[in-house]
Structures are given as C-alpha cells and as structure tokens.
Image 1 (cartoon, rainbow, N blue to C red):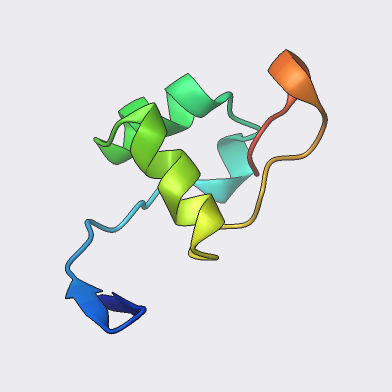
Image 2: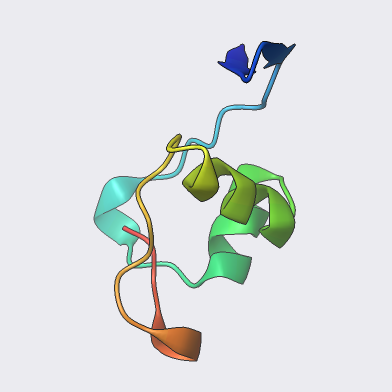
Length: 61
C-alpha cells in the first residue's frame, strides 16, 4: 500500500532481476505486468528510481 496526499492505494510490486538490466520502459512494464503509464507513475511517486539517460535513450536499472 502507498499513501500519497491522504489517498491510499494498493499497487502491484514491480519485481525484476536487477542483473539483467538496463531496461527500456516497455520492457520493464512487461516484466512487471503493468503499463508504461504505471511505471511513470511509480517514478513520479518515488517508488522506483528515475531512468538514466534522456529521451528515447533512457533506461531503467
């Protein structure tokens, strides 16, 4: 569960093997069973670290 601005939601865990990275956002989303939008939401909320790089060349992990 995560609480942001007094709103509590249950979010799925995004568990992926760290050693296999880096991941493009689509790959990370597919591995975690979530949408790209959800990955961005997790980053915005501080649940996962932001991607490295800029633009289309950025990667997670």
